[in-house]
Length: 401
Ligand SMILES: *Cc1c(COP(=O)(O)O)cnc(C)c1O
Image (cartoon, rainbow, N blue to C red; front, side, top):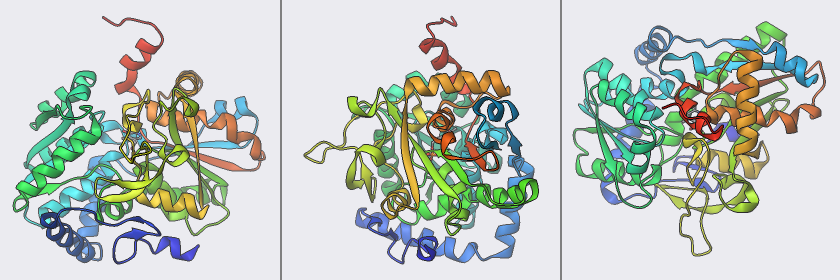
């Protein structure tokens, strides 16, 4: 297992997955980014600034919190919550944008672009761009612009420009295509902040490294609070950045089980889901090889999930390799189970999780029975649920107008 932690290799591969499948014009920009990152990640001043921003702007470290009533309810293992929902802007995504904006600054780039689905990465990017006074453009599928009007307005309040993308299904994958197009055209002055452990090398590595602060904190906190590492870590998986960030510092600890939870949408058997690791095949999308939801001709198919942040046909290449190697296991829970978990956690703990996160909670129904009362398991609470209140109300048949 030692070698899993040394990935990606020099070409950007995690086993069979990853790489950089991009046009010639982007190759130079990706190399420039990789060189800059390789230099800065060993630079004490850079690391000090990153640490400072994580503590003073994001509010880290996030607590490792004991979920008393959930633990009593399941009467199985001790259940702990890693509270990424308490970060500034309400999710784990800010860890990565705070890091990448420092790379942009170091590279002298004055213009920032990003893609966004539900709008969370758009908000996290517009937030750090505002802080440094940089011009910022956010690409978002036109359908998502409609569905996520509150986040669209938040992005605009932060001074960024939102570009609605009409092509394809007008959702996240189309926004990503458009952002890549912008980057090719404006490569000299533009930095592209990718929002998950996806895209061409070196992005999956960089986004993982910046989010790994979560797993590093957990190593210290678990030893302090219960004298050992947890028996298991559970995290939802869209592109896979919150999961990678908490998994990575434990990859070489075989006693810690790693569970990634994908969105089964209407059910895996219906085909209406967003679970490429559970029901997909390897293919190439957005510059990297990974498990992918595609038809038998290799065409990317439409996804469905109650949670916009998990509604993506691909997944980060490192997760594909962790799946094939058996180091992590990937389950999927459906919309209905997720909604039930959302309500249960909200009422039982006084913590309203994001619908993405509620997938990780829903998996407890399947996982708790495999553990003893002396075991400790940790759920990564990737974000808070305020953004999802309209969706939940609609699902519950309640009108807020
Ligand atoms: C975006 C988002 C996710 C999914 O993205 P990953 O890259 O898989 O982490 C999960 N939870 C929340 C709260 C999000 O905003």
